[in-house]
Image (tube, rainbow, N blue to C red):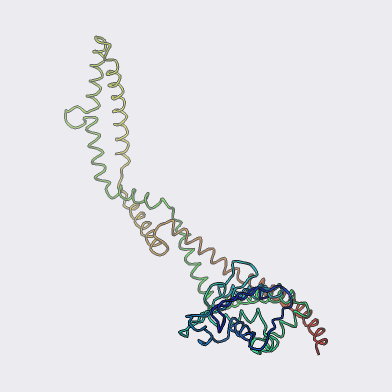
Length: 382
């Protein structure tokens, strides 16, 4: 329903705003009163070609704007048109059409304040208004509207909407079926590749912290001789096992003995004497620890080869599947998920075909009901 018509600088009209109430409205007047100008303005509003002669003399543009309230039976149709073209209104059930004709010949068409092509503009305007007597605007003369009008008269819009929804769903299902059946050979190749990749990673079974551990062990093996030499040197410094020189262990022990004698003469050195005793114990423990460490240092060429091979394998996996071991493991999980999806595609295909049959049956039932009602009401129109 047209609620408001605003006209500015159009033909002989300076500025005019008309408010329309619901119901039947008649505009009358003598010949030359301007009734046809209103019709011309509405024609322009609905998408008729513009003409610079429509611009009022002395003005640079003519504007015609109409505010429409969408009736309930057209709500979904108009809403779909607006959403499809990004022309939604902030006010529900309201559509504002605007034509702006410039004196220089240019014109603009706007829906809800947004510029759009004249084709889209006309489609929306044609859905909102019929101008009887102007065939280009009469929906009864547009074959594409015949079924829609018949269904409105028969009261089967809801069933028709159900059929449209079911048809949309069946289209999606058939698309998925097509994708699953597109290239069975390609799927087989994909499965083989995924199985190989998963097997390669799972059989290697890398751990996130493993590479650092192997590098540390490799470093010890490669430098085993030097490590043993340095550990022995530390041991000699502590124990004095080279020549006649005393080691740190003996020297600190001697200092502790002297301090114990001093303590008897001066009790104030109690803390110092205790520090010496503690240090003597710590040095002895250090000496035992370094001796044990030195004894465990061993050059094992076989173990070194194993580590080199393992590190090479980890490097290869990282190069193929990710920059870190963690990324490699994530890739393996995703590959397994993809493989499972392909493996279960046959089951999915069966599910999709069953759903397709269900939808076809439902569409058939709904369509049969619609057809029956169409035939019934069509008899009353002949």
